[in-house]
View 1 (tube, one colour):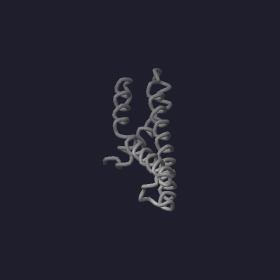
View 2: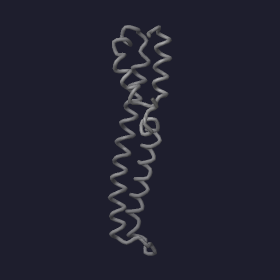
View 3: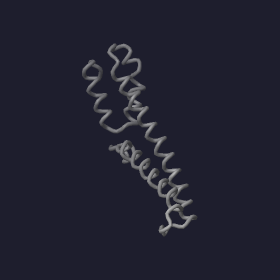
View 4: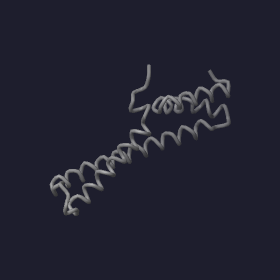
Length: 116
């Protein structure tokens, strides 16, 4: 069964939300300053709030994804087979939470170490 879109494209989606939030926040800040703008102050405030929320969500999601990937790779690079087997449940859980390319990396690593 394929993984959900939000898991498969977590890096792209989180960065997209981050960038949209940043752009909306900039528009919300600059809108009241522009004398020719068709955006009123009230609409600019709403855009600023929505942009700030999206920026925060994007930052948290991107940070969380990067931490999971970093932890996965550090656990996957373990050279001692006994330590790797001891941490196998955690590595498999991280691979399950990350896009399918990380599950493929885990399968390759398990083949290298001779683990079923």
